[in-house]
Image (tube, rainbow, N blue to C red):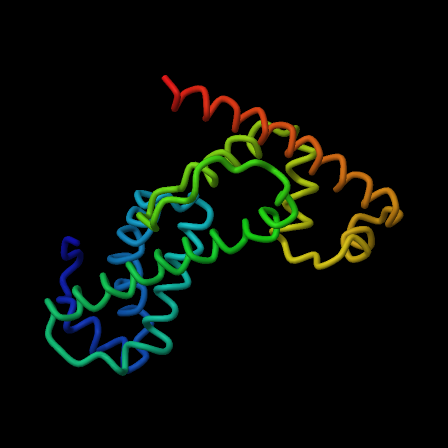
Length: 196
């Protein structure tokens, strides 16, 4: 991370601790772009990467900077560690978001057992992701709202959409059925590829 402006990182940290807004803005500019680049390069979607970068800068400045003890090099290492933890936490949350949908799709033949956690998607998650991407935008939006956006029931989703609950329940069920069919199709392709 290159030094920008005339202030050293140590000076900016000290001034930020004293609630100097100009120092905070310079620290944010100095590290924010790097955070965003790091998150994007580690498979975090751009909008989430931008949000994570802003949250991390705010978290560092508002709650963690007073606990930092060390020199400039130590600050960079400390910030990089926080950034890596935030990225890992995002990926953990993203994996957990798929779990309710995976449970709903439990009847699908997933193929071989999951690989050990390697940081790469397992074949099953890759299969789900590819099938999900092949759904129509209406089906993706329905399932996204139901399983990823925190609508705990079809009744909640129906209220949010201004639709009858029975209509929303049918939309969710049909989208799941289409996703299951695509998953089974993806699964058969997976088995054919691995036999060759």
